[in-house]
Image 1 (cartoon, helix red, strand yellow):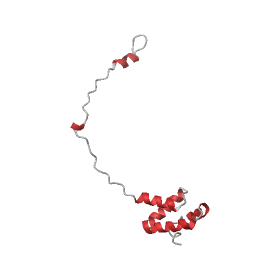
Image 2: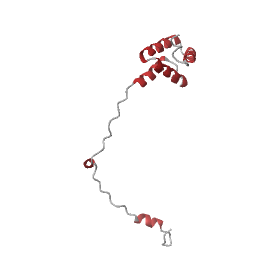
Image 3: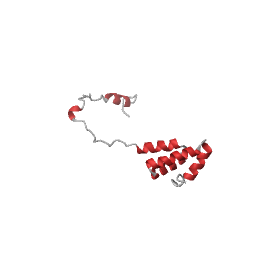
Image 4: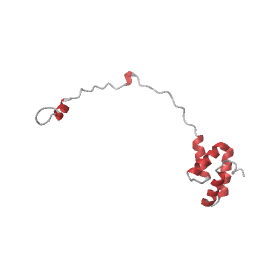
Amino acid sequence: MRFLMLSSKAQAYYQQLEQRRMNPHHHIVKIVGLSEIYGVDPVARAIEDAFVLQAFSCEYIANLLEQRARKLPEPGALILTRRQDLLELEIDQPDMEVYNKALENPKGGTL
């Protein structure tokens, strides 16, 4: 009963577990246990997402919860390079005469 109260998709999820898994009761017990660790709302969301993706197992629910609970590092400040850190490259001016010759037609004029 605790599992069925987790989400509006819990009944449909359970039916799929019965069809696809050897021991659906094992998966239900684990998912209810996950709700005690992560909370009801995150488990309900994981059940709904897993149902959409047709992934029926307690391991998949646990994986979703662990990924969502993982703390991402705070974005740091953008480090701009100092002028003295830039490479001092010298680039020669391109020779545009190559393109001018390519545009000339056989009679010696331009297009």
